[in-house]
Length: 483
Image 1 (cartoon, rainbow, N blue to C red):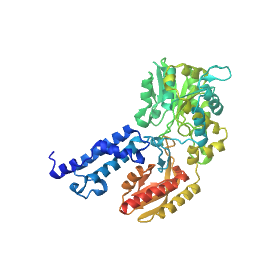
Image 2 (spheres, helix red, strand yellow):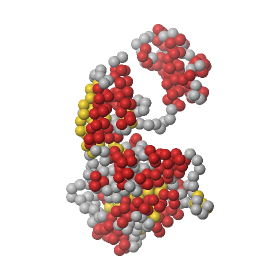
Image 3 (spheres, rainbow, N blue to C red):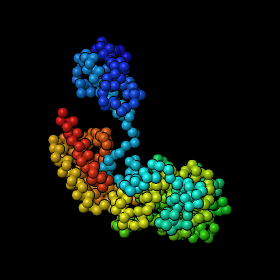
Image 4 (cartoon, one colour):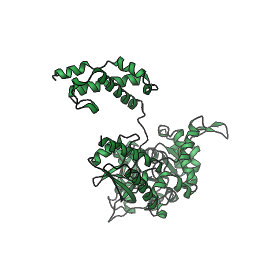
């Protein structure tokens, strides 16, 4: 690449790193940032300016100026400002708070379920010091971490025994490995689900050393399909709740109760993967009915697995409940050590589950349940409040309210549309895509959705305390557009 005389002039004006570091040492904004971070930021700043000169892309707000019009002092100022920006970026945490304006309650990409304040307080209390994680306070001897959570899980589900691993995929893996390694597992073709990240039930079975035996068809499976598929090498009958999709129309499936009867007849254990398990009968509150964990356990199933961080509303975990003899075998599997959860998850899960002892309290205090069951009037009031705040900005920003659907998310209730009163925003001379990018790069990032050429904000998943944050973010966009 040939460098012009003008570019050579600009390159000669680039400050050296020591000069930038000298200025940074006198700048209070760099006071608490480690020198290694400042050094890396300074190098990146100079490199970015060098690339801008070579590529003829200019310098930020001064892009219209010719490079030879910049003095060394001006370029140094640009370098210092860029160093400040890069240092802040390098020194900030990658995992950060995000405002979820999408209306997807259990948003897999945005951290799934939110934890209730008292749950967080319990996590802090348990983890800020030592705890009885694996110590029996009664006997004064070593204990099991599962005992800290098993009692309350059994109390709420009616199970004989329980244990917890790090997520539901892990729960399914260790259960299959324990119950059927080297043998065959029968599953209905209509239940061979794929969850997030192209993670499929057949893949989990292969990893656990089982052989998949498909039975029935995609839309219809009958009891005799299972019985016809049973052979001497069959070790387990598996039912998978299709929580992230639905087959409608000419369909038929075998209930867990029917499957347990077949298992008893042929002396084969039965397992159900509930996926997004729930302790609440949502049909009582006007939502589609989901099988509850307690109902699954009451059928006599040997193993039931479900997530702790979806409809349950707790931290990420895979919960295994069922008959004691089977759970004891799973606990003894060496895989459980690799898949076990830590004290933070245990503390968060126990505190979440304790709220379920009072259903009304669980619904009012667990964020996932509260958002799913939020009354429309409450959402409309929140939407009107934000509309009023945004209308104060003016300068080409227009706001309308429209009833649009929210989603449960997290692979739960796929057909459910929750009516929500959404805020629809347009800004003169600014595309919805541009608004999305600017809000995504806001501090904190704001994630919404685009529909009908408008930026949509769904109040269902927004805390009222964050409404002024949205107002400030939109004000910045309008101010930038009017400069």
